[in-house]
Image (cartoon, rainbow, N blue to C red; front, side, top):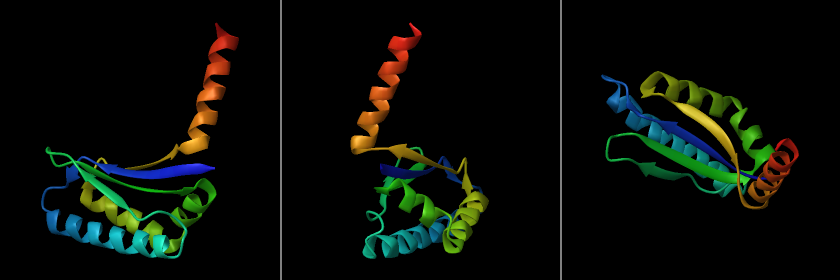
Length: 113
């Protein structure tokens, strides 16, 4: 199933700005290695004018979840929770999986109206 893992935050916690930059470098390294191994796409970062940001990797949902559950990734997530405000990770359906989701949603709407 095609998916994207999206990590978001609203800014660095006050006093932890340098650690937030270090977190970003660690995220690029960890997810870059996973991409080089063919497990996902390279991380793609986005930053808002107000200081918030996000990065996304795409791949097979089961593979993304497997990477997320590895010890190195869990340590990275813990670091993100300590240095970034409103830090969240979510999985999204993409490609054919998103089309299938919309089909199921449309069916439910018809059935329930």
